[in-house]
Image (cartoon, rainbow, N blue to C red):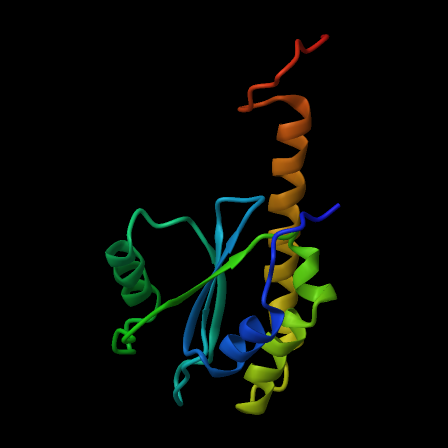
Length: 145
């Protein structure tokens, strides 16, 4: 069950439609979904699961490594996603991400983005399993083994 954190879905969708570089921060996993909507004749937009950066400066450096032919953006918009990964799909945010790339001529965006969604789901399932098993987590009660 997803939590009850307030989420301004309209603001998230507007950011997805307008932002050049986005980073989704999830409540269930430490990895981030990094999206760079910029493209050129040589480079298509990028969507990638990346490790958490220690600082904004580190994220900009990692983006430069990932996208060396692009200038650094003025900003990277971080979106806190306080729900499960599947809620991206259920809320229409994932579809908006696909549409953003398709509008720019990348008609195969849905197929190319599916492995990224699958990776996020797999990471989340593994983390939830660790939480249930108590691996890396402290419980409030004794664990019977």
